[in-house]
Length: 560
Image 1: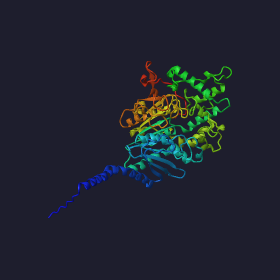
Image 2: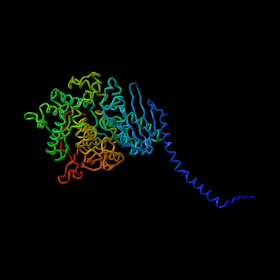
Image 3: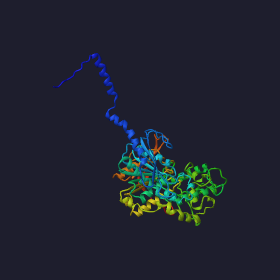
Image 4: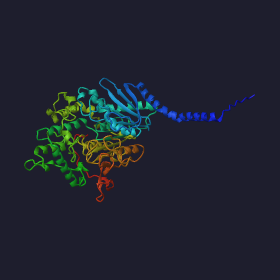
């Protein structure tokens, strides 16, 4: 027999009870909300568990969940970064080698692994942070390396004296170590491998990318590098050559005022000869322009608006580059229009760092810590430098892109034509060599493109348009996040089966806030260059077309 018990309550008691139960139910989270609340805890636990990951020669120092909006040391403006797992590790494969690797793994990952380069002598992980932040905002798992050179810093390689294994890690090995280590840690965190891999970097970071393409072609699907150091030993020799020339006598140094005078005259001469636009503060095609600073030579006393004989000699040495005793240039010089004073202009090349020429540490690696730059002799000393270091640090001068092309890899190089730390002519020589290696321009363009950027200094800055690479932490973001205005977007599109980039619109903003546009120009895939249509505004990219550039003599040098 079924028995049903019914409890009857007066309505005056039932109503408050129902309301109380309803309030409790409303206060409880929904199942979905409960799971969402648990997610950060689970993500943090998964992140922190990485310290227990075991890999040969690898020690994971820390693995920490960084909540959205957390301030990051050494990275201004990081408040908009998404939540990510920060992993710091060291790879020590043999005595003397200690390569630092830092990953930022976003909680919400889009499957892209993104390597970032360093600069100078490296040594600091934070040198890669600005580029890493750009990639993290895209949803990429990003990584950088100190290249194994700590406690060196980008401008000071003195701590590397007597450390040959660190030279090799810096010159060749560290980026590949960063890549395989980073991919393994990312796969452990996400439970799956990367769908696509990209690398971006400038200067030493550019060299790191070229070495990956030439010697480790399986590491990345797409590589975007700027102002790559190619011949490292001779690149350092060029900077030393400039410094020694400017300090030959007290009268040899070019003052800020004389640099401005020289810069204005070079731009006027080149643009007036058809190598740029009248009124521009930069030269469009300085590779084709020849400018003799003797045009500014004083006719009598120095009135501040002319160059003395000693100043003319210094300027010529900067344009010619390192020159042997026979008077012939043996490496690349700087181009007309690059003379502007400032942090990374010719002023930097003349300025001592700790009483030494910029980047002079490399010579101490060979000649010892007490090496004195004043005794340097190019013809006598460079063969010894190359014998000791070329096989260790000049691997970007060797090899072919053939294997990288065969696996479907895509490479974009760009170089500022007003660069005064890495000669722009070196990138042209590198590309021309790869064209020959791959069987001609058409074959090379299937895998590699080169863009020369008028008025751009080293990795950024200058009077030319500098916003066209959204992956570069040192330059403004392009106004449009598409392949038409952004070389990184163009690289991603190209690796995914889209068209190869023939041109990109580069932007110059009126102010540092990155809002009002001053003007825009087209950058063209080398060997083409932008030519004005003779009618439209020079402030509009639409007034320019990419056309073949006239043949011009290339800078003499020791190759790339």
